[in-house]
Length: 292
Image (tube, one colour):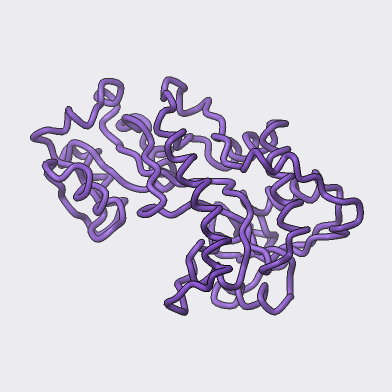
C-alpha cells in the first residue's frame, strides 16, 4: 500500500473518506455476526459493495471506455505469468467490470512507485492495485466501494479448530508477526493472552504446525495461502475480525477526484457482479481456501 506524503486532510478529502469508512464500519459489524458454519472450500465472498450503488445507473455514453492502471508485482492480485501476460484477481475483476458496463477496457502496468502519480496525471481512468485509503490519498483520489476486505483470523491445529473460542486461549500461546497490526489487536483486545512474536507470518504459522505455539493470529488472506499447503495440520478457527482502523478498509478502485461517472459505473458494476455470482466465482478461483 502506498504511504502517505502529507499530514493533513482537506475538507473534501475528509468527506470522501468519511463515506467509505462509514460503509467499512457497517460491514465490520455485519461480518462479525456471520456464522462460520460454511466450510472453507465452499465459501462465497461477503457482500462488500455499497448496496445504494444499484440505484446509480450509468448514463448511456457517460463512460465510453475505462483505462485501468495496475502494477505487475502483487500476486495473486496483479502480476505477469510465464508468458509476460498480466493476470490475477484484479485483472480479471477489471475485465468483468468493463464487460458488465459494456465498455472498452484497457489495462496498463506501471511501477508501484509511479502508479498513483500516473493516475493523478490522467494517464488512466482508474487504478486497481491496492492503493491505500489514506487521508493523503483521499485528497487526490476518490474510491469505489470496497470489493475485498481483509480480516484477521486465528489458525490452530486442525483437531482444535472446531471447538475454538478466544476463551479457550487462557494459558496458551498465540504466535504473531512482531510489530504487526495483528499483534496490536492482541494487545488491545486480548491483553491477558500470552503472545510470542516472530519475524515473519510464515514462521509464526510454522510454530503452530510444529507445536511450538497453540494458535496464530494474523492476516487471513496470507494465512489462506499457507493453509493451502498445510491442510493436513491446521485450519482457520473462530470468526473473522474486521478492524478497519488496524487492518485497513480493504481493497478499492481509485479514480481521479471528481470523476463521478467512472466511479459510479464501477460501483454499479460491483453490485451487479456480486448479484450475478461473478464476484464469487473470481474469489473462489484465486483463493481456493476461503479466508472468511
